[in-house]
Length: 312
Image (cartoon, rainbow, N blue to C red; front, side):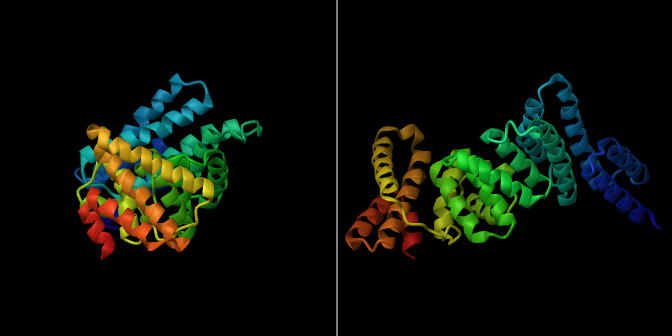
């Protein structure tokens, strides 16, 4: 076995140890690999990632409540991605192993609380447990908990998008599209793209970034382009009470757009998204085409480019 093969074997062994939650042994194996090839970029990358997390894991000693421990671990996931942005191009196999390690650690804390069944109706806990099962690759179990969480939190963007994501990972594409569309309608700022794993939503987010949108505004534009690109193609008929709320929401947003220029970058896509929902409703019930044209004209005034894309 030549040196390159030996190093690759050690890297794989380290990843396997990480997946089985043996972080100390994983780090030792990476050190061994580095002694054979001191500037191997994947080994160096793996060490940086693992050391970053081991520093965070040490901080768990400051927490006594299992829920707080699990919550702290998951809260560091966004900071970890900021760290990754700084250290440069990564390795998918390494990040997958890190993900398994991190979510396994968080899941262990949450399972301690779930054990006696007392907290089975806590939507926050159900959401976190579902996220953890998704993170370790157990999508069927994740689905069970995320469905329960979404039943409690019907207008929560995080719960709906996590449920959509796991449905997409289970190849339940139609359900996933409906749920993603709902999540980005009800609570776009609640959707955590860093937590998403399915190609369905990650590819869409990348395509929207390429149009020049980023930050908070990106979350508002995703459902617009999801509609234009045919990703959010599955629609449902609105109940009369939902239609009333939609029209009231449109009225309020139209007034806000006129009176709040400082937040218009978020309000305009949010309003266009609602116009699209209204148009879909009119088409579903075969409403007077004049109402559809009137709504399209409002989109044209707000954003001629979106209007042209929609028309063609």
